[in-house]
Image 1 (cartoon, rainbow, N blue to C red):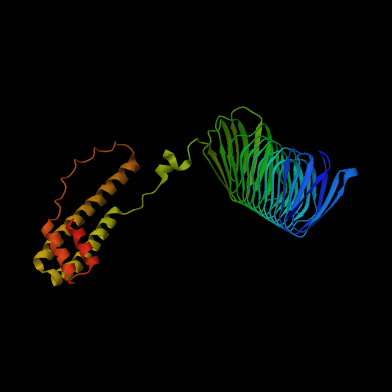
Image 2: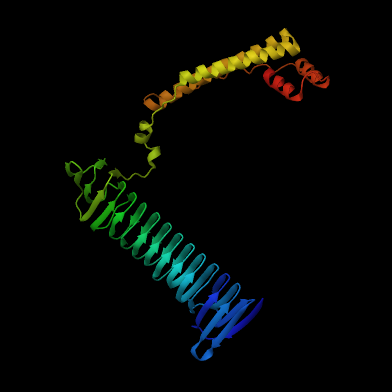
Length: 410
């Protein structure tokens, strides 16, 4: 692998016409461009601070932090980190990773796109894989064919078409989604929301700013709202389920208008299936009393106890016959008594489990004190253990059978 250096100043214009391998670009403090590769051509233009590159293999660049980058075509993965100049990528045939940029314009990515810490606007025309963006400013996406996951956006989010699921969390500005084929999840949104053509479900959690917000879905709409935040909601759906403590409510077939508090937050919801309006709680729903009470304990503990007893009795009958055949009736009777004691303990355990389940469903009585500890059962005598070990030595029983007998004696 060869290496060259080009002194083109602090703000060079670097163009990669074609890179048929992976392309890795990082910044450093020196006003020098360092090119590392095995099969590449470099054409510098010092008078215009420009450098044009073409590579048939992997290419690695160290560039000044303020460099401007233009990638025409790359067949491998692209990684660009900590470049504050303008970044323009026309076509990425594989995955694209951006980290620590000022702004970027992306035309086509045939793989996945990961973007982190983009201070300026991130414009994306088409991504055929998934998009994952964290800590960005404005985000504009024309088409994403996979899923879109965006967390911590300081500005606005504009999405023209999303074919997969969309998850937007902690967005400071407005959200405008013209078309979404699948589900949409929204949480902690600071601006206005417009999403009126969602093919799947919509889930909204948290309060919203003053203004008009519009959501429409082919599937369900689930809103979890903090009751301390004002809200005027208009919900239209074949079925509307709610538990918000509205101050004023007008409920008609397939429509509900509710007022919560005094404010200027208006939420319009329309669903072809169901709309759920729930209170936002700090604890997860599965840990609340309401959800716990809703659990149906459908286990038939009496049936379980009977099945345990029947299975143990069948096993005892079989093992008793085997023991009598090999070790005589006296030894078999002793082992059988110990196994019967184990069966009785199993039945008592099933009864205790039934009592505990009933106490959990009522939640009215404090749990009873634990029973006093039972005296430990006597250990098997060394004579019995030696007898079993001698039978293993004489080939009368196998080591596996001996282990079973020793366990039964214990």
